[in-house]
Image 1 (cartoon, rainbow, N blue to C red):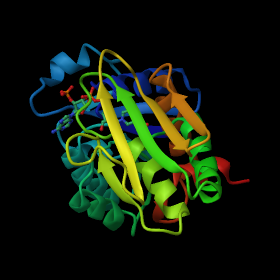
Image 2: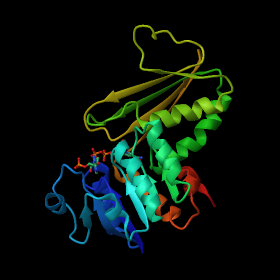
Image 3: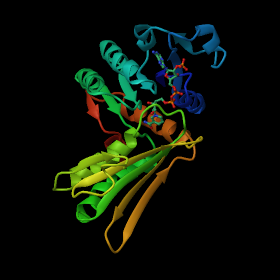
Image 4: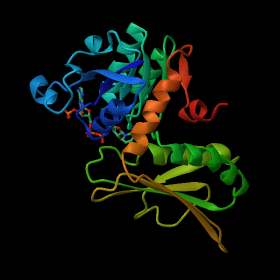
Length: 259
Ligand SMILES: NC(=O)c1ccc[n+]([C@@H]2O[C@H](COP(=O)([O-])OP(=O)(O)OC[C@H]3O[C@@H](n4cnc5c(N)ncnc54)[C@H](OP(=O)(O)O)[C@@H]3O)[C@@H](O)[C@H]2O)c1
């Protein structure tokens, strides 16, 4: 049985991870981190009684095998280091991380196994496998990334849009510069540009389109999530595949597709 601690347990993603963990025969959700602004008793009304709720990271990670984190970047950095102090595997899906927060994740990965992914859906993992191949063939075609999310999303562009854009840039020999949205000054496409466009509207869970176009034709590849379960199931699968591995920073796609 995998003993799980959850960060962001009261959030949109955390609640779905908790629901799927409760239904999984091989996972036991034992602890959850509650934000300082929220009362523990109030949070406990949302969750099964068996889950130990705390405001304290070192208490959260004690006696568990793995932590799953869907929260805020500043929480993720501290949580990664707390997991490392306790020798607990760390799975994070939090997006919008700055360089200092990535540095904390890399530091943690020197002593524990860690996976950070901007998108834990299987469909996006497959997309990330094929994008370099497409981008390498269509080097002369224009490329733009478009994403749509619900109105409450805190970061823009999405982590997944950036991951896709970086995958295209890495696959192309020539230098690529990112343009965030288009407006006065960036209306006309310059050579080597890759435009990234974010839309925030309604309850859209997450939709990403990669557009490749020449003067004569075009290709659009779109992934969309029908439910947050797509991400939650992937994060739980990442946890199963991560625990017991040597320290290191693992890619979700590698964990998923290895034989
Ligand atoms: N990788 C993926 O597949 C994937 C998929 C979807 C979303 N995401 C990312 O996951 C993150 C969470 O998304 P969401 O939609 O679930 O957001 P959300 O509903 O706002 O949930 C955020 C959670 O973090 C908690 N939190 C905030 N500050 C905290 C603190 N100082 N200490 C402890 N907990 C704190 C919140 O607690 P309160 O409820 O008390 O505020 C809440 O439980 C975002 O970065 C989002 O982009 C990733």
